Image (cartoon, rainbow, N blue to C red; front, side, top):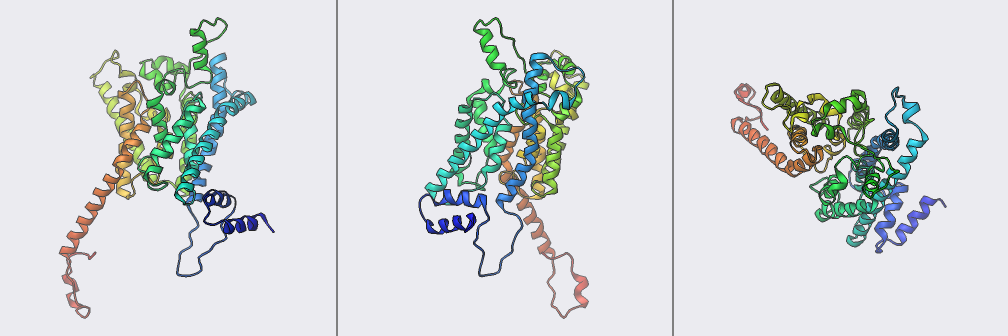
Amino acid sequence: MSIKSTLHELKMKYQGQKMAPAFNAFHTFLFAPNETTHSGSHVRGADDLKRTMNTVIMALVPILVFSMFNAGYQYYSALNGFPENFSVLEHFITWDNFWIGIIKVLPLVVVSYGIGLLVEFIFAVIKGHEVEEGYLVTGMLVPLIVPVDTPLWMLAVAVVFGVVIGKEVFGGTGMNILNPALTIRAFLFFAYPTWMSGDKVWVYEARERSEQILAGADNVDAISGETILGYLAQNNEAAMSAKYSISDMFFGFVPGSVGETSAFLCLLGGSFLIFSKIASWRIMVSAVIGALVMGLIFNQVVELGWIGETNKFYGLMSFDFWKHLIVGGLAFGIVYMATDPVTGSQTNKGKWIYGFFIGFIAIMIRVFNPAYPEGVFLAILLMNVFAPTIDHYVIQGNVKQRMKRLKNAVVLPRDSESAAKELKAETV
């Protein structure tokens, strides 16, 4: 007897038992269920929730692998200085870099999945329903949007909060109004702000070494992991330009949250999700347009001389509008967060509005909040709240247009062919 048959027999034997949902989750994760529809007409679809989630994870795997190498690269570059003649094979894809990723990034992934799925299993057992696959993507997103030195216990507390408050209290997968991964990130930022911002949280051991130096250690070298947005928030674009090139920004060889640095990989992942029809291209394109519009407005404010170089907003306002797309977490947020099919707008017109304001507000927060110069995640959470309202007014607008066409329509008898010319408008 095969393993699949054995598991199916056990499933049927213990059906209805308290722990059945947990067992069924492992069973369906390994094998497709044996049950099929026996009566009634039905349409067989090639995709389901699990396959959709797995497709998104496939788009995230390259970013995860890159982030593991980048964690080590940023660490050794901060210690020894950035190499003058940079080579990907010689300086980036090395075992030493990857080992830092193994000991720092991989535990974040394990804790995220372990704690999150445990909470999902507990709620499934208590409520008596099947374990939903919605956390498969959330569990991968969470470790990619936090600093590399985030304590594991802190991440565990945030995951419990995000899954319970951000999703389960609304009824589970498909019922939540806020993106669970962003709910977790927001909890971390407001509960532990010193671990989520500053120049000592983006590079491995930077915070630890800083504390040792403050304690009086003499044989410890300090590490500074200031991000590009951090330099700009301090009006220090010259130092940023001397340290990082445009290609560094685009390909992601810069410090930042674990997986948000590479706009190139986000572009590839977004193309894959659009091709597989998992994510909405309307949201992505409109978010990019919104970000460019806001960036252009700020550039014009600087060019018109409305603010000077001594203004605290000058660095970010004067930053070329198109460069905003390749720094920080904007590209990652647009591709993997804004396109969440549950918390985003559902109507086509609503997706354009929803995406535009995400990009527009993200750059606004980035400029006007120097303490937190990365605003895309807060912008997405804000628009998550307004997404149902946007769809409501879009639908109501469509209903009004159809009612007008209906009032102008003339209903004709079937045998009155000559009267067809009297039809003034198309019927609904």
